[in-house]
Image (cartoon, rainbow, N blue to C red; front, side, top):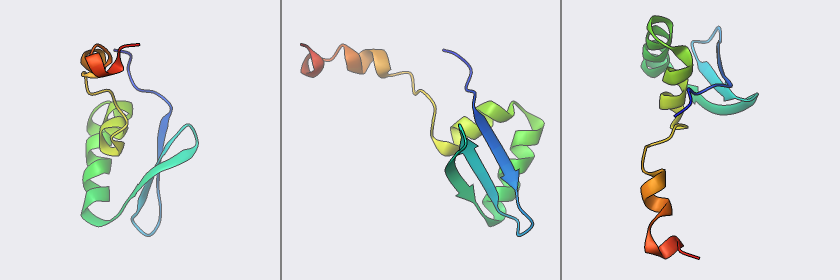
Amino acid sequence: MPAPQGFAYEERADGTVRITHHHRTATVLRGDRAARFVREAESSDAQLVMARWTGNYRRGNERTAREHPRHAR
């Protein structure tokens, strides 16, 4: 599975954090969640952290779902 890419985040003066994916807003975090996100992003792989926090990552079940009889053509 390739590493996530295309994410960026911006900390604002009012304490909110805006996470974008390919220049489109994916989510906005406020308060304690924003502070926890920034700490985590600075201490590990920021791209992976942003993918996880936005829910924009592969869950590992795509192949299983593709092989389900409901999706047969």
